[in-house]
Amino acid sequence: MRQTIDGAAFRRMAISASASIDNHKQKINDLNVFPVPDGDTGTNMSMTFQNAVQDLRKAEDPTLTKAADIVASALLRGARGNSGVILSLLFRGFAKSLKGKTEADGTDLALALTEGVEAAYKAVMKPAEGTILTVSRVSAAAGVEAAKADPGAEAVLEQIILSAQDALEKTTHQNPVLKKAGVVDAGGMGYIVILQGMLASLQGNDVIPAEPSDSVREAADFSDFDTEEITFPYCTEFIVSRETDLDPEDLRAFLAQIGDSLVLVDDEEIIKVHVHTDHPGKAMEEALRYGSFVTVKVENMRLQHTEKILSSKDAETISEPTKPAGVVAVCAGTGIAGVFHDLGVDRIVEGGQTMNPSTQDILSEINRVPAETVYVLPNNKNIIMAAEQAVPLTKKNVVVIPTKTIPQGVSAMLNFDPDGEVESNKAAMNGCLDSVTTMQLTYAARDSDYDGFQIHAGDYMALVGSSLFATDTQMKNLVERLAEHTASLEKEFITIYYGQDVSEQAAQEAESIFAETCPGAEINLINGGQPIYYFLISAE
Image (cartoon, rainbow, N blue to C red; front, side):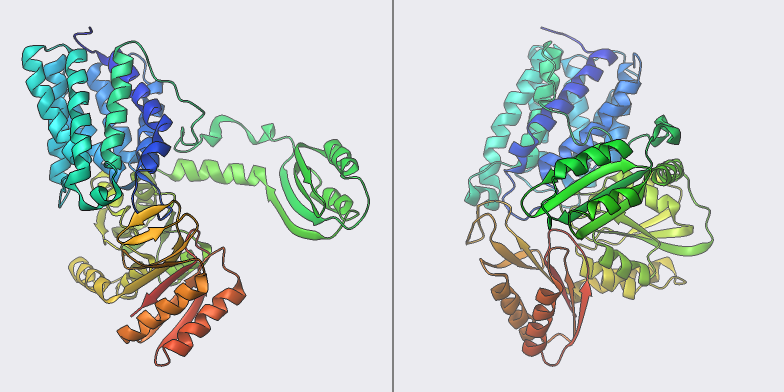
């Protein structure tokens, strides 16, 4: 059995751990009890760890200290969601404990994991039992005890994993929600999967990704190639309805002569085309022989490439202050982004449900704001911790306002004074959050028995605040119930943001229902364009 690890061994262990969590991310996601489609635990932990792989592969023969520092730094900047942030904290303390060491035995390993646990507990305001924190704490303590009998690195890591598995099983009974659902904690499971990947590498069985990961790179390096390598500059996409008897294969042959990267799919009703060409006009003119256009999109890839290079080079640039204060907001949907811009937000971080932005994503936008103090509106409870991790990474004064929803973010902006003092702005922006009632209408991503509701995948779900309010197979029924609930609250201002999957007619019907049910309220309907949530409703 292996007695010690050095930099090369730890480098392999971390890469193996990343593959392990990536291979099991869906299994971990499925442990999430609340069935709302979200940036789930497994996905967040996998994407967080992928950042370490990128940096480790660039490092040649790193020492143990250097390899641990690389992992800690990469996880900190790449942290996504609460689970990703806690994972980064665990490895930050781990790296701190190994500082200056060229080799580590099992005792060193157990003590490093213990320091990681301490770092995580210090950072979490209200640590709860039955979570990744519990699993990591119990297993690290077991590792310290095991090292007294056998200080070999492999033997101690084996005992740590065995203890972690035992602790994980107990999380079901430590958390009432987990107990009702009969599952273990997802974050704790993810932590064990990472440790198992590390042990496998230590035993010479490095884990290999089951399939190419969609999150291997945080961002592509667009400067790797020149614009001249783009042979045909216009990415042309369209759908035409089939209104003639002409053979689509003839269209395919024509397009192949004037471009590349051709994809043509046809059925009885439409022809869908993607092609890179110098002559998008010719492509579309030929397509008109087959029928009328349903959709058309043409993009200049050389221009996009140049913009990507400029954007990536500017990512680490810290804008010099030209004003006292600015704001960064996290949101998804062009309509909602427009609302925030109109209210004075400087930079938008695209993200929310299904894609929690990383600490680095948020940090980059903070640095681009030309202000001394930058306020950050996460607008999602699972993004707050990632935003808070950006605070010490910039020379700007960063204030995170813990907005958990888009309506709370909008309310915070309405109370923001760009010329106000920091403390008065913090008080005003934080003070308004509880006065906002947020209602959301989405769908169930999986079957679940949650809080007394028997939920089936695909059911519509209404949430009030963070609590499940009702489920139904008909969206209109839930809109009516939310309107009745709002009427009982006697709110004066109601804003309805409708999402990208809601037609204008359906949105207007929802507005009419609220207008009829809440006759004394002022109602505003906005095309938010947000994914996942059919309606976001704010009542104040």
